[in-house]
Length: 89
Image (cartoon, rainbow, N blue to C red; front, side, top):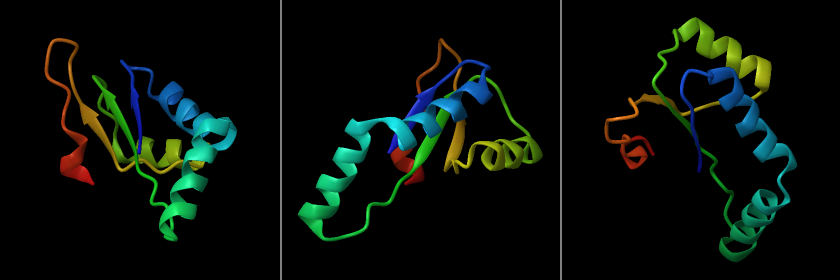
């Protein structure tokens, strides 16, 4: 599960999720270890927590542009409790 917390810079959140999936050796090692120990495929879920609301059309554009699917973009202000992503898995 990848969670990116951003203010209004949704483009950057997608870039960082893509970078982690493609370039972070620790992430790849963790996925490999999970697959090796369970013998099951690893289900990946990405979430963005932001105080910016994205239209469905813009969300689809960002997903295509960055080749990243996000399970949800959850809304949260700096002064409010961060949503529990377990409700979406």
